[in-house]
Length: 239
Image 1 (cartoon, rainbow, N blue to C red):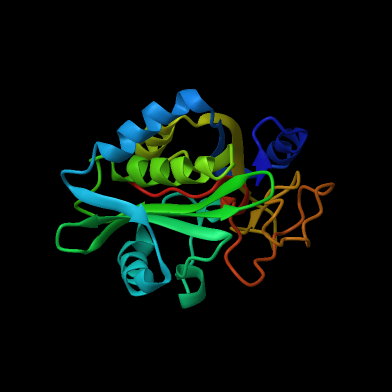
Image 2 (cartoon, rainbow, N blue to C red; image 1 turned 90 degrees about the vertical axis):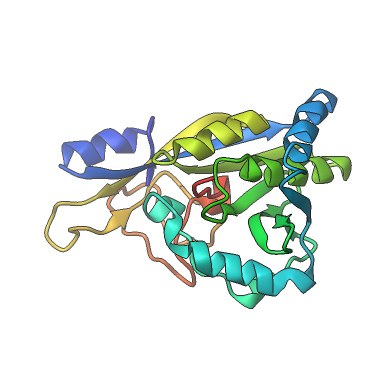
């Protein structure tokens, strides 16, 4: 992946590489003026669901919703999502989640975030099929931002696939401002056909220390988990 405004883009295009997916990143800085908007998004779904922070006791519900929606993530390597393990599905002090529960107690939407010293990064957000288009994604994200801002966190980041206009609009409603666009290229050369590459230091915190930002033809190694832009801008699926 390369940034859309990177010099590496023209180098790759000159070599005949092809864009197969577009991703975006966005930031949000919370202040007192943000709270009424976020509260309205969170509270506006109360007739349908109950929104609350997820607890370790919710792990089975989290895993069930993840299994049901695993194939729903749009885009390519930049917004890939691997099935949650029990460890990743269990909230911790620095990996917290918020969910929306239907009246029958089923979890129908959730968002997880990773809490850094300076920025809170969205890990993923997902809404169960049949419940999309009702503001649940915006509601759980707003709930997470409100709760964390009350604990002193003011900077948040998220992102996702350009193929998902619903999530783009929903994040805009939460207050995120898009400030990055990333392109996933595939090479057309011998030995590289169909393999995604990244350059320009994409995925700063996802453990891809194997990436050489000076060489736009360096192949990304997917070590341990699917390489994803989610570690720097988050991942969104249809809402």
